[in-house]
Image (cartoon, rainbow, N blue to C red; front, side, top):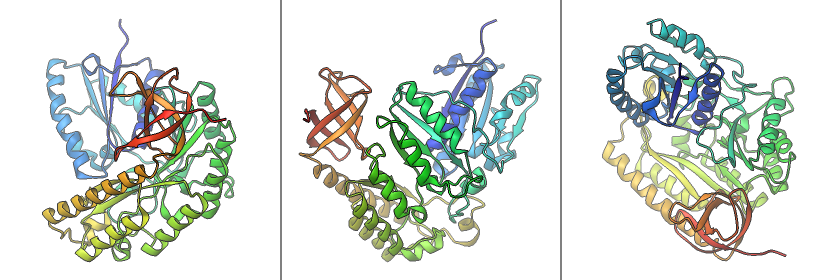
Amino acid sequence: MSQKKVFIETYGCQMNFSDSEIVGSIMKSIDYQLTTEIKEANVIFLNTCSIRDNAEQRVNRRLRELRSYKKNNPDLKIGLLGCMAERLKEQIFNEEAVDLIVGPDAYRDLPNLLNTVDSGQKAANVILSEEETYAEIEPVRLDNNGISAFISIMRGCENFCTYCVVPYTRGKERSRSPETIINEAKDLFQKGYREITLLGQNVNSYQWEDDKSFNFTKLLESIALINPLLRVRFATSHPKDISDELLHIIAKYENICKAIHLPVQSGSSEVLKKMNRKYTREWYMNRIEAIKTIIPDCAVSTDIIAGFCGETDENHQDTLSLMQMVGFDYAFMFKYSERPDTVAAKRFKDDVPDHIKSKRLEEIIELQKHLSLASNKNDIGKTFKVLADSISKRSKLKLSGRNSQNKVVVFPKEDYNIADYVNIKITDCTSATLIGEAVLIS
């Protein structure tokens, strides 16, 4: 009998991609083979995101497409995993294409759930845990280049931003033991990986419960000390937890990348209070000044929401002015999307018309294009150490990689290989990419 195959399709954030690697490992443990060809699969998993309505609509459209697969192959099993499964539960159970529903903390139960499905019944487990769920599971690295990998160090969120479903779909904050994280990082380095990204809903809120003094700063330093050739990144930071102590550690070690993703969401203190972001415009700018003082070469990226409940044109102008003051290197920008059962949905009216949201978003995007281009132009003439991670999409004669600031750099391949560190002098740029050539540094 041929080995059963599983196809995993992932939507949403880096945490979801990391979770899919956990799912892959669990499926391999019960003798499933991972496949990148959906038509070969005996089981299809959609690992879903609920952060915005658009993300859920994409999954709903995909489920409608998969009904035809079920008609052609009645034995095919389809599972909905992740945040959307957690949020909608019974509602999705009525979807004829779905055989099993599994929340983010229940992937260990997949073998039992699949047995239930094989017996002809639907199956579900959406129970959230109060403990770290997958600490000792070695993830299967999916769609990776053998150079970069994710390590989940904590799960959940307790910030309860009024617009966000994550506390309800991911549960309470809980952190992995430092030992398991450090060992995973060491193992990856020994296998040839040269860059890891530490992940958490609020990664810099990390704190080990058995030793309250072991916080994210100490974890970051411990991983940096594994080997100077191992680059360390992290995402996503909450502004309330960006301490000077953390910034000094980032500045101290060359292999801790000089790039911080610091979601601001709005430049208006009034809107931030309504969002329950736990900081003001002034606090955020104080943290930006600290970053620029302690780590002068640090890149800063952000998330911005346009058109939150009650946002006035003045509030919107506050966001644009903050963007200009900070000079973000790049940003992820979205229209506000009301999520059912959040505090905002219960307490506030979604009263900014969609065409106004769209107009404001366009202005934010246009400004960010100028800021990104200005940031990249400022790098022309500078030399960066770039970790080559792929062949350029536009030319087999060029390599692509990222510098410490997380900017994409394209340069002639010459005699260099993927996984090499190469010193690149920047000669040109676009708003999204730096272009350069290798130089020798004596």
